Image (cartoon, rainbow, N blue to C red; front, side, top):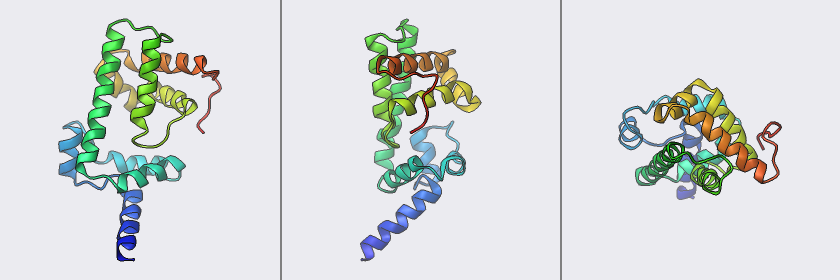
Length: 167
């Protein structure tokens, strides 16, 4: 019962804080540009969603090593996206579709991500100034290019990106 109680306490703390790492651990894992207020802002924005609860559940069971692996997977994906854009990979091509699938796999580290949800994220990456700055800071135009990749992949799976909603 004590282990169960401790696990529940950790889950509650993860739901409230998002990350159960010290600020120093966060900076070491996520890099010097990491904003330690980001998880609290995400909690304020998404705290009432199913996905936040899924994220908190995963977060409660992760230590620094697991978060390091997640951070490395995200950084690797960012590099692969930039390299593909630089190489002229066309949205809708098999290589672009594999990158869209890789994005869903990497982001499943946070919560399950459907193609429809991915379309919504692609829109947000392009439209939200913070997300656009992140992707366009990697490569100018990356946010818009990635949205095109996601939209083309969605179309190939019978999803209209113009009407896709978060599910």
